[in-house]
Length: 292
Image (cartoon, rainbow, N blue to C red; front, side, top):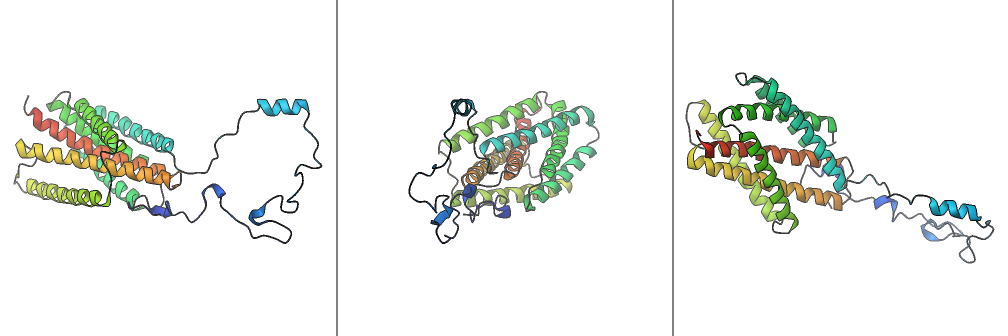
């Protein structure tokens, strides 16, 4: 089975042509042997332990006290892998964001713009690259952290406390979306995905047109007043939608035995969605707080 998400279908992650952990493999039966490579093919009857020396009491004690065998290492992605990789990515983002908060001057936004452009380029490379590169994903997180740290500092100078409010709002959206998904209130179906992607494309085009108009001196009011609030809520809702797609693809990857390294791609997807929500949350809170 192949994932609907092209990002998670790289390298045939969900194509199960092989058998899990080597089970189900079958070798051709040789003369005098049973099928499936049975080690007892040449003596199907009788005691298979015939001719072996019985274990001594000391050997039995050693075997009893020995640690139990650990889980079979199959190189498949697990939820623990996803959590660990996501934590590493977010810690990198927060760490570089803290550095930018203190070092990037608020009157010189060039470093933040440069970091944002570089992060966008690396994000596109990661999205379309067939193999997973943890270094690129961590580099994306670092550059995105520089950008977010710098703009958060600028917002903070106008609206003190807005950064922590945006962080708490992002965490609330993440938790609420995860609870709704795990409880079955949100079901990621093909129809749900098509509608959400269509809205996201339209939203992105609208923001691009508004950006061009702003650069030309026009203002559609999409980032201020009641219309700005509505646009902000739609943006946060789209971020939550992206999170549900991430949850579904992670579950599908684990269920179909995606390689362990795909946990990095899952961490990248989650980080991308959380960054989107945080930026939209900053803008929405700024509009709601106005000039206080």
